[in-house]
Amino acid sequence: MFKFNTPPLPSIDTVTKNGRRDSAQGTLPAAGGMPSIIIKWREKFENFRDKECQRAQEVLNKLGDEVGQAASRFNSLFLRTRFTDETPCLNGIKLAVVENSLRAEGRELQEREQNFTRFQRIHERPYLPVRAYVALDPWWKVYGLVMALFVVEALINAFIFKDAAGAGFAEAMILSTSQAFINIVSCYIIGLKVYGPAFVVPLSFKKAVYWFVLSLHLVFILWLNLSLGRWRSVMVDLPTKVFKKIPLEEMVTLTPWKDMPSWTGNTPANLCNKVPDQVEMFCQTAWTMQAAIVVGVGMVLALLAYLKGYFSDDPYPGYGRIYRYVLRSRKRTHELIKDLAEKTHAARREFDGASVNIHDKAFEDVGTWSQAIDDMDQITSDYRILLQGMNDSFENVCQAYKQGYAAVSLEAANTLEPSKCLFDESSLNTNKVFDDVSQHFLEDDARLARVEEYQDELRKTFEEIRREYTEKLDGLDEGFLKLSQQYAPETNNGQAE
Image 1 (cartoon, rainbow, N blue to C red):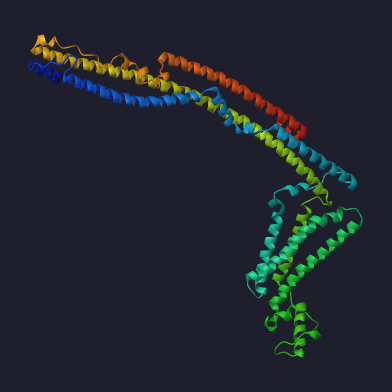
Image 2 (cartoon, rainbow, N blue to C red):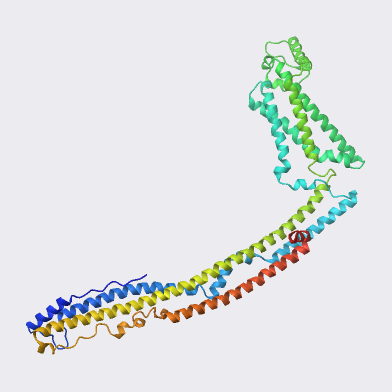
């Protein structure tokens, strides 16, 4: 709160002494003039008045700006603008755009359903597909088990192959990963695309093809896992020093026995004696526990991959896929309806919150306006009191000087002209002194009446805005119900419950 400084306080004794001295010396001011001591105090009071007036002017200018800003924040236009700015969700809802999107999705859904009905009629499928929804799950649900089976088999076989490969873990991991990929991924694909159709497709050439592919793949997987298990046993028992003597380019190029080249230090006869021995060892090597584990793990995981593929879709070929087209189209329609419902509910919550905030802030601004007006009135009142006090002090100075002068020469004292008032009525007129902010000056009664008037106007404005926005929100609710009943009645029923 602004406070004026205390004005200088004259010493009456000093002024009286000055009067006696001037009287004793016979000093009289010139006609129309004043004694020096009185001139001195007049200048002091005027200089103090000018400084305090400047300080008060700065504070009044700030309060005037605060009054103007507060008044601009609770007028009708500003309040409507704030409601628009603080309800972006409500203003962002375009029912026409949503309706166009739903209409397009509705046409696509109708086409998908017709295709699905035609497929059922042609292929004589009276029931809905089973497990068709599985492919709509997140990728980690669809392929998570397959990935887990792949990793498990790759790691188990890598640890088992590590000693048999004659190299390190990296080489064993490469071999194991390749075998696991073929074993797991191919079984999953066959289980998904071949296993089911082989049983449910009517007797026809397609059924024979499905059974041929399935049988061929079963034999291949059995051969693959048995071969890897046997290879593991052979590599453990087979001395590797013979193979170290064979150049790589000759080892990977298989030729008939009679055409095979001679290696350094070996004759063709010795060669024929060595190679058949290794082939015979492949047949005669005993099975080891690790080899049996390789075969067992491979077959069990292959069976799990088969089952995962089989239970990932409807067994009838294409039936699950065409039904998923219908499900995806329905899902997009439901998502549009759900998004509209969420935005509508969010818009209502948004408006309720904005209404409370803006209402409280507007009435707070009225209070700010009133407080600033009251502070300005207090400053102008204190300013008049300050000047009146200095007028009284200056009058005391003049009277003290005259009394001191009369104490020596009463007759001469009567010749002194009466002193003029220090600050006249024009100086005390604050509307004139602070004319640049005088339009904000109000007495307490007028200020309180204006506050009540502003508050009544605010209540009326808020009532109008609340009615307008309520009508708009009710229109959104009606539009949502209409669209949901038209394009997703089951969603609307679920929400109604």
